[in-house]
Amino acid sequence: MATAILTGQGGATPSENVTQRFTANAAITAGNLCDFTSGQAKKCTTAAPKVIALENVSSGAVGKFLVTGLANVFTGLIPNNTYYCDTSGNLTTTNTGYLVGVAISSTEMVIKKPWWERGL
Image (cartoon, rainbow, N blue to C red; front, side):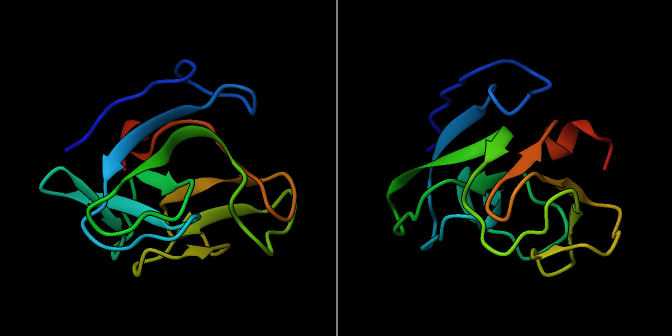
């Protein structure tokens, strides 16, 4: 079951995060790109993620997910690079048409707008 917790407003800047809490249908690791199945979050296996896991979440537990704003859960990002989602639900710098965000440090990425509002 989803529990919406909105922090901030629409087109986020690094200081305006919009997060939500969702139950995980399987174990999810912080930084996973996720989508939904039957109202529960799951690790994305397609190029259409909806949120980013902000923490590790056990199957059946409720966790915090980023809709838009600053995600500080990655490693190895290259600052100023634009990142996309590939067809397996992983981050890539190859333009797949599914924009995720722009890295501002090796661990942080800014997501300016939710994927589903980008017409993807």
